[in-house]
Length: 166
Image (tube, rainbow, N blue to C red; front, top):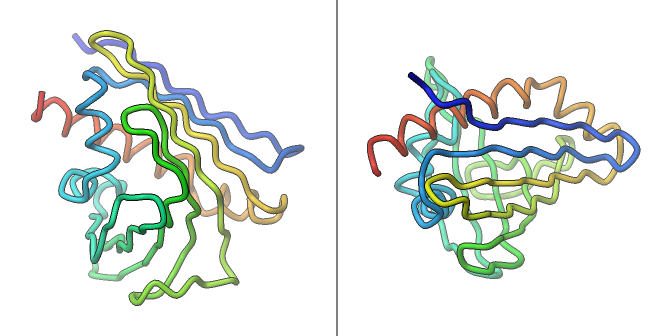
């Protein structure tokens, strides 16, 4: 029997933000690694049947993660996350945007600021993600792209990966 894990997805148009609260049935160090190590991120970050592939990752303040989401037909959509602050096993923040394969941000597509908070709940870990956009148009464009559905599928993929690692 599967445990019911918390999943909240709250859109606040007044603040141009999305708050995601997601519980995982794994201890905090493992969940932290799943969000901060490319070899684990590549196993779950994209919603199935898509796959994530890291080109470069330097998880440190001032570092970045350049990755592609690869579609079933081989199409590639690139993203760049630039890390701003890191407090190990507590939180990290950064900026995220669509890019090309060299990491040049596409200003025509939405960009956001992410803060990921991790809370140890014993055998489970609560991750709270606050995503903010500069304006309502970018928030709405992200939602129209299927962000909620894609992120939900990716988080379910993380559940599967964590079960194999714990």
